[in-house]
Each structure stands twice: as C-alpha cells, then as structure tokens.
Length: 209
Ligand code: HEM
Image (tube, rainbow, N blue to C red):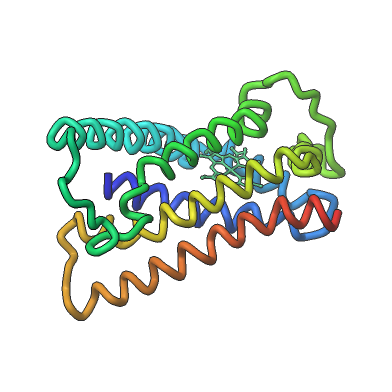
C-alpha cells in the first residue's frame, strides 16, 4: 500500500503541475499541447499502465486489509477511546479512499474516457490543430454539480493524504526521532497545497471564466 501510495503521490504532483496550464489564459493551447504529449509519448504511456495498475492494487489491497481487520475484531473494543490514540483521518482512510475512488470514476468518465477512448464527446480543434480538451474541461467545470463533486473529492483527498503521506514512510520502516517530524511536516504541507491547487481549477473556471 505504501509503495503504490507513494507512486500515486508522485503522479498527483505531475498531474497538478501539468494541469496548471489551465491558468495560462491562452485559449487552452498549452493545456492541449501538454495533453498530446502525455498521451503520445511511449514512455509516459507505459507509466500510465503502471498508474492504472497501482490505483487498482492500492484499492484492492485496502479492501482486503479492511476486511481482515473486521474479521480479526468483529465486535470492536469494549471501551472505545479512539480519539486518545489515533486521529479521525487515520481511522477513516477506508471511507475517504472510497470517496476518492467514486470521484475518480466520475473524473475519468468526464475527461480520460472522452479523450482516450472517444466516449461520445465531439472534440473541436484549437489554434494549433490539437483536439480541444481544454474546452471540454471548461464546459464540465461550469456545471454546479461538477464543482461540488470535485470539491468533495478534493477535500477527501486532502484528509487522506494528511494521514497517508507520513503513514507510507512509517510502513516502509522510516521511523526516526529526527526525520519523522520532518516527514510529517512535509506531508501536512503536501496535503494542503496539492489539493488547494486542484481545487483552484474548478473554482477558477466556475467563478472567473
Ligand atoms: C481538479 C483538477 C483536475 C483536472 C483539471 C484534471 C484533468 C484531467 C484530464 C484532462 C485528464 C485526461 C487527460 C489525461 O489522461 O491526461 C485527467 C486524467 C486523469 N486524472 Fe485528472 N484532473 C484533475 C484532478 C485529478 C485528481 C484530484 C485526481 C486524483 C485523485 C486525478 C486523477 C487522474 C487520473 C488517474 C487520470 C488518468 C491519467 C492517465 O491516463 O495517465 N485528477 N485529468
């Protein structure tokens, strides 16, 4: 779980940086050029398959762990003092992960399915002759339903990362009185800044474009 989690964290960073092209105010040319590169470069194509596999592995393994834990202790504890020794984020990883998974299905259906598999949307072309994925993103983010779904998914992602980032290092055995506080700090910063960057995109399109 930790290795796939760290790989997904790396993907999220690249995905965020690439998508920042939305803010370039160039009619989508940079955004569409970036999308062409990401879908035609053979190395990135290969990494994409690793990404899909990691998402599935991360989710399936989470469900197996969750079921195993339930079987190990079906009745729960006689005295629940969960707050005393664990955070809400750590106890809700399954709930948050499920929300992110639902968000991801909707997200992939909106863009990835249309762009890569011709999901029914008729693409127009931008000034550079590339399919206008930017226009599809703008059209989608103008719907209030989309805005709400994206914000819920991104808040779930933020809390999931808040615990998941440092937990991944701990699972790998990186636990040290000097380094762990630094990892926790970087994890907290990441869990705030990356989701803020993603949230800024639908908010910007909905309110300012
Ligand atoms: C809110 C801002 C976001 C925008 C504008 C955005 C945009 C896009 C677009 C246009 C695609 C299809 C083109 C492509 O495959 O590169 C895509 C694919 C994808 N997105 Fe997003 N995305 C956002 C947030 C997220 C978040 C928060 C996640 C994860 C929780 C995510 C996960 C993915 C995945 C896994 C793919 C498939 C990538 C691949 O095939 O290599 N996206 N996104």
